[in-house]
Length: 427
Image (tube, rainbow, N blue to C red; front, side, top):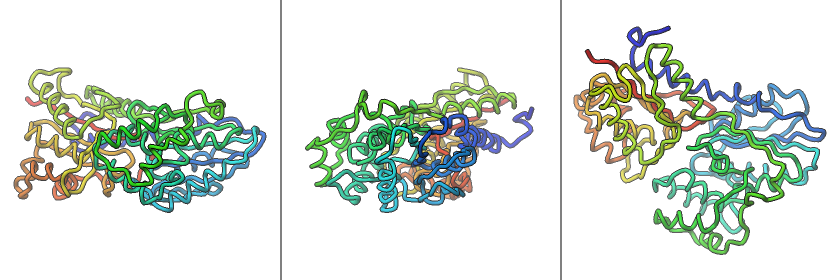
């Protein structure tokens, strides 16, 4: 057992994050869910930030012939021998992703009932598996994607729109593979672990509609480009719905979830004599609003010892959003942590980490950052105005200047955001 008093508190919250990442390692998660070898061909396809690592795990544990292609984010590749790995852009799709998606769709067409399609899906797949529906250009899809990312829309809302602008998402990929058997292994990066939302559910029936997609664009004031508007209002071909016979034989397994990562971190905390409190694995909302709530809970612990006395650690996951109003740098984790810094106002004994488990916070080179009780004072001494930088959405700039960014590089997994708020006893 390692007591927290024997370690730097900032190092301790980083150790909790490392435990969370280990719990979502594709090398550990994939093997137990591999299906039986088929009589026919095995075609491995996939998309997402963990897709290459998942493909490597398949290769390492599959002793029969296989072939295939997966697409992942730039710099997220793995050393695969039999499964081709293509790297493409995220979060805004590019031509590499479009070409890879087209090739994946072609690979599964014309298969037989004795063939197996093993689909490896993880967060980021929506942007990486980018095959625009007929009548839409890649540029139009990029424009809608950028607008959604800035709007503050929740992930299920964004993915509803993406499904209805796609030739491959929302169950269309599984429908194209029929009558082959389709087995999908999913690493969840969405609140609630809904397979139809993870990477926009390319192999899962879609309960949403064109009308839902239109309503989301209207809700956030997003003007649809000409091709997009024509498609959404024409409603020519809906996504496959629950009960569609083409998907009747498809099997779907969520093999790694945010909750398991929180439980792994909680075990490390208990071993160190720290009481873990898991607040939830599916927390959503504006990052700065969530930070206000978390600050309130931290103050309740410090003042009243509720819901548990210090020392304790508040653990949470999910996917917050950021409505971009400024021109600063940073993703939702840096935004959350900067808002928490302002809300805590130097509260003694409180340390916090907020990181994206894929290692990339938004489109920056950091996973997130770490907050200490001295952060606000250090910022003031360095001439940094925390409130002004928050208003400018410049969480990256704030923590970068303080040397408090967490940089892991690509982790090749993705189970959403991880937050840990450590509250020490103040005597």
